Length: 172
Length: 406
Image (cartoon, rainbow over all chains, first blue to last red; front, side, top):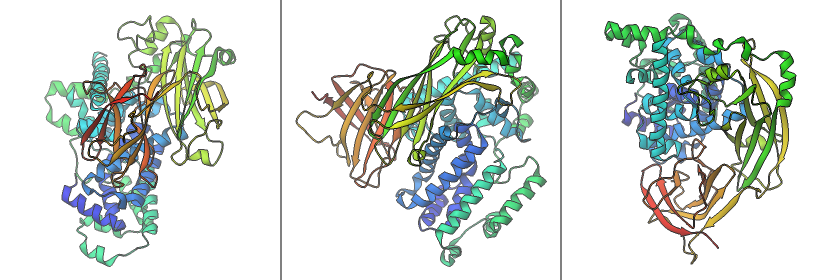
């Protein structure tokens, strides 16, 4: 996790077109970006495109960001918009095996993807932002532009869906 | 339950193709910066040794280094700066009985693919595919042009609901929605329901195909709503951030039906695919629109903020109620970082509609943009109350009793 002051310092430098500072920021947030993009797109190829577009968009628009401490929220919102834009224009059928079988040997990656595959699309992103990114409900409402009550409802339904899934797995 | 949530925070490996794209982006950024070595910035850097060496490497070296590291580390994470509490840590620290449960979870990969349990009788033969093409029909139910977006609703209908059933894009191994599949039992999955009813599953989908260079820039969002197991509504919202989508615009909309096929690499084999050219109506036959403004022409400035609501429109489509608010923000810095929602007289939000998120167009030179939200269908009210949130500061303003324009 990056220290808040360091993040602000890097954002300020990036706004002065210091590409090294910008790259350092992106490297720091890369995993968050990847997990968020995957939570929406559920495939690595599209997630890679969304992340690339987001980095270029942010670099080109960073001087329009006046409040440095909102950088991460701003970055996430741009990423989410890009993911939604890509989601249907690419529109490839994702094989179920890609959800269900570990594409990598890394157990944590598999667990993460498995968890997401259990959830319906509309619950995945709020669930990941809440539990994975530890955003507050108000912040998720801000990022997704939906009311707080809707976020709460989706979290509750997402939790229920996970509970049902794990319950059935335990019984097997 | 909460322990499973840890998977959301597990440290994971970013795949190589993502790292490659990131490096491409960095190369582009470096080129755009036009400042390969900025001495002033360089002197101020406080980088870790890894970051120092990383940043000093050429793009090619970075790619090579990533590949080499990936080989050496195997499942290790290339960018792992801080190891977060991961699954292995959980296994090391939990008591034996809990551990056995987790091991079981890790081992679920063998039983995960529940679709393998689909009986042969539910699989569709090649001969049947020909029949199925006639069994599913797609119809455009409505088209609606609204500023710079348009809304298209298509209906998929199944002609033989006795032997087949429609399913949406959701995972078919999750619990069935009993409001859709009326005969389903509590807790039954879609596959289990199909098996019990001896109905073969057909998954439908629809998407927009750009026909021109301009249309390639359109943004598309999609949602699907099952009516019952023989009817499904597919809703597309297509937005052009730069221009209005005028009535009369022609868009190519593809509709696809797929059947479950265990042998196919994608598991769902296309049994019907068709593309329709849809002409966007300025006003849909099924829609009703109401505009809201203060009768005396009073400016709809939101409190003491820089936000002015120029136009409020509620549109009832066949499926939902959509609010489109044209907002002008005098504070260009704030841009479109506001969200406008409908609230009731007690200040409660209306329940969200089928769309996942609010969508806002990019502000024009005067800071004007359109903020869209969808709600569960309601009767168009005589007046509306709106709540405007500054998404940066969470400051909230409300405007009450804005009457419908006669």
